[in-house]
Amino acid sequence: MDFLAEARSLLDSFPVVDGHNDLPWALRQQVRYDLDQLDIATDRTGSLHTDIPRLRAGGVGAQFWSVYVRTDLAGDEAVSATLEQIDAVGQLLARYPGDLGRALTADDMETARKEGRIASLMGAEGGHSINNSLATLRAFHALGVRYMTLTHNDNTDWADSATDEPRVGGLSAFGREVVREMNRTGMLVDLSHVAATTMRDALDTSVAPVIFSHSSARAICDHPRNVPDDVLERLAVNGGVAMATFVPKFILPEAVAWTRAADENMQAHGLHPLDTTPAAMEVHRAFEEARPRPVATTATVADHLDHMREAAGIDHIGIGGDYDGTAFTPAGLEDVAGYPNLIAELLQRGWSRPDLAKLTWRNAVRVLRDAESVAADLRSTRGPSNATPDTMPSASPRTA
Image (cartoon, rainbow, N blue to C red):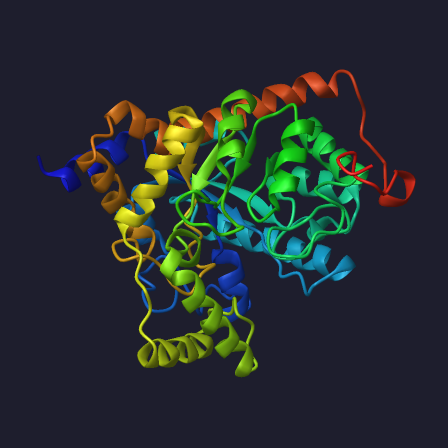
């Protein structure tokens, strides 16, 4: 069998819904959103992981564009920067209407697929973006944001991050109210980046399916950004989806220490470790030349997906590459054109077409549809919450 040809055939019918792509932030960093300078209608290899020709070549049918802002932007500055990110996605949709279709619902995703356009949704990465305001959360939803990652790399006042020192023991009382309000609005609760305690608290609280927009299996690579097996197993009850990421330091154990050293090198040069501008990549390349990088492959990602399917079930897994949010990518998955290589690897491993259709398309569409249904029921019984951290107990129920 020609596995690559079979993969492309499958993606023609059931294209990839990718849970996380940081193109808007890359556009902010590189050209301050000036699409005349960085027109993604043409191949942008060398500058970006993402452009329309490579999205088409990769069989991408829907993309959650991350409207991420760094955690060193705080308070109202974080809110403003997130609004700029949302506006950037709007600019992309207006500039490329034949290729990108605005999607707010699962039905919109299906409509875009039938029209041959890439359904474009948004996800806010980091609860710091709402500045402890549920009204801001609702405003983001009204502007089209369909998930929010509860933290990024640092804690919020109300949720512990996977890569920060514990503060509230998972979710605070206000953090649980954030989850409840997300359920009520129909915004998916994204548990990538959060501590395992936060994952468990969110699953205890949420009455709607949750997602991991870009996380892999901790049993395969013991990194705190990945999902423990007990949490993966709970997705079958919750109805959620864990979307495997491609970031080498999260999927390849040998890459963890190397990336830590590379991050320290970036800081020594006065650069943020997450900086992927051309100048920053020159620093990375010089470091890599002196100290060769352990290379993940499509098989590395497939190992995670094999395990996640076993732990969570085929109905509860997906794909979230994190393109343009990472300096390094696996061999065979260098950019958004690489998805057929991953599907071919899974076909070689015996994955069936129906199972792959769930992985690429059906699971993600279903989880958004289920969240919409839960939200409709909740809005019939309760109104908007106006809680603040100051009006609720500070201790997490887990630790109270």
